[in-house]
Amino acid sequence: MFLLEGVGKAYPRSVALEPLSMRIDAGEKVAVLGPSGSGKTTLLHLLGGVIQPDHGSITIDDRPLAYLGPGRELAGLVGVMHQQFDLVPHLAVVHNVLAGNLGRWGTLRSLLSLVSPRERHVALNALDRLGIGDKLYERTSTLSGGEQQRVAMARLLVQTPKAILADEPVASLDPARAEDLTKLLAEVAADSGRTLVASLHSVDLTRKYFDRAVGLRNGRVQFDSPVGDVTDDVLERLYDIEGLDSAR
Ligand SMILES: Nc1ncnc2c1ncn2[C@@H]1O[C@H](COP(=O)(O)OP(=O)(O)OP(=O)(O)O)[C@@H](O)[C@H]1O
Ligand SMILES: [Mg+2]
Image (cartoon, rainbow, N blue to C red; front, side, top):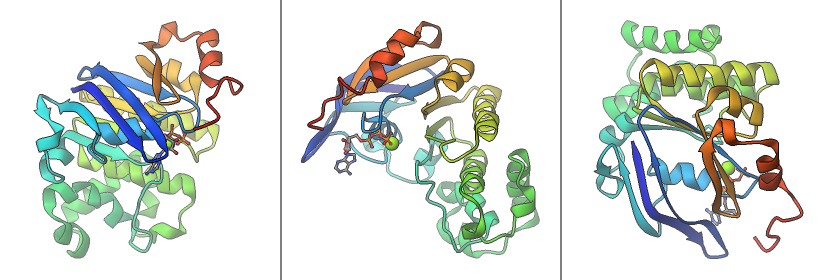
């Protein structure tokens, strides 16, 4: 599904990701772990075409990402759930959910048209699945952080991309909800053979719902292995504060 060859990204004052090569197969569920600033968001943004690499190439589903402009084709391939879930606060929930179809239906139609009964049904289905169907017509800004996170997830369900990239999708949820939603993400991916790449801070959830874990530290891949091989020792070395490069 994803092929990265020598992909790296630097900013004027820091190297966000050292050049790396990796392959993620269709249907794989990959967790990206690492301390704050280790490059998790950078990696997910590169995979989703949100930012461009300085060097190297990224292929999605056999297509070079560099030639995929933003829009329909890219939206059908990858859906990105951002760390700040970029909802439009003054719009009703239903419109934010249906914006998942922006790539396919066109911005104006999604945002300005009256919601058709079919679209309403699609949005409600997704929200129901996440336990917030009653919020369909609420103004998004009046929802709690956790509820907004679920709206962002509903938008992904509606978009139905081949691969889901989720950047700390359960960061603002209580532990029970965090597990529910991680499970749901994993189920949604498994149902339809979708690829899932998610950054998260929970090792337990990683072990329970993912196949493979990539550990990033200071912009470098420290490990990339089946979750069964990620022992407490391996994790301690990943998160060890003492050894973190303080210049970054
Ligand atoms: N737009 C940017 N401009 C300059 N530096 C950036 C930019 N984005 C990221 N960086 C730097 O790149 C490094 C990696 O950032 P990244 O956001 O990928 O980390 P992260 O692992 O997602 O952290 P967190 O867990 O806090 O979300 C950091 O040192 C960060 O300061
Ligand atoms: Mg991040």
